Length: 106
Image (cartoon, rainbow, N blue to C red):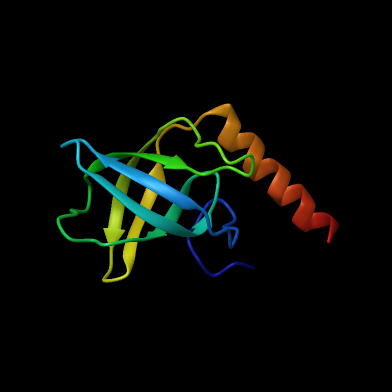
């Protein structure tokens, strides 16, 4: 039995990510993990607030960015932010599905 409260399994995937705040500011970071519902992103957390909405673009395996993923910031620490995805595109869905299938075959 899992002892965390997450709905979706987190995968230890490190990918570059671009975070665009509603204010227009852009921050760059690296994912510590990814799931179908969220991510923890290591980045400078100066100026972030819990509940703030943002748009994420994740670097996919083909070297392109996903379409922007509308998200909200659930929490932040000194090392990064925890984001909950409110939407995502088919490219991101396919990327994570392929990763999970490869991991289950290993």
